[in-house]
Length: 121
Length: 275
Image 1 (cartoon, helix red, strand yellow):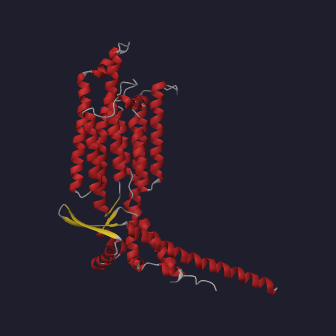
Image 2: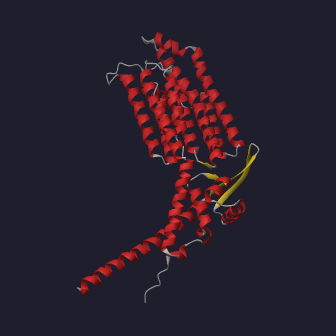
Image 3: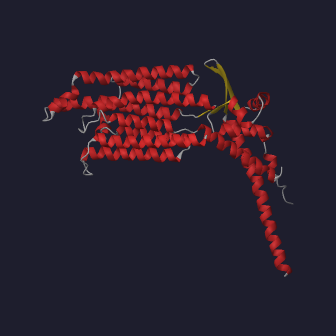
């Protein structure tokens, strides 16, 4: 009896898989750190919505949040931790596996279809 | 999860990453600054292979000011854009190379003392280099770099940037060690006599390669390597005249500086258009 093959979707991390949180990590993968305002504007979110997602990521240990002042203006900087970078890379890998698997299946079906057409001649 | 959904997520993620890269990446300022400094060094350069004392002092001061200025530029930019680079390795490598340049300056004077003391035929030409006032100037430059590093470290620490602050403090300590003549004796003088006037361009090129790696910019990497090669060729031609060059060091430095300046301005225009 063959061992059951696990679907790559099982590998997806619930914390990172959520689209906004994946977007936050995508931004942070490209920058040393990003300001709250930049994340809000880039992802098109409200302050409250972004705060909630950042809280989830921070509790998971995926991001670091630093609050401070630059002159008189309060600034909140967010940066990705190693755990967050690893989780993001794992998520992207899992998504690519899903896409790759479908493309393989589609290619296999096309070959079978062509073989059937050849046999029926 | 369906594959179509996965494709859309992957595409959106890549688009976000590209957008952030564009907002974050900036390479024009270090190139323009280097171009200006190289062109400025044409005023103090010397065609005499061992007469580069003034050029060494110029580069020690310029380097000690240029890297903190670059750090402040990137900090200002990150506040304006909302995304920042981790340029600490670039600043660290750059300041470390400034410390080495500083040793070259001290080395020139020490080596000259040794030569003139041996009663060689060129003792008169060396005398202008080893005058106590010039030696003292080098010593003061070492102290100046230590003080500048201290100020930079303090500013960085207050800004919550622990990494650059610690690195700047380290460079300051090295500066003090140089000033008090506790480390690295004449051995490193070799580098200064190998490439008079253009050694700082080569070391700035090395630091720019680090920045190119941080910014993931092949364009900056190629420009930095081209600058380094130009610096080596120019320095060698002055020593051996092996390329049959009849021009002085100023012409070379103006050419190399103009190349860096034009590269920087071109990068600025490209960045401005991409916004």
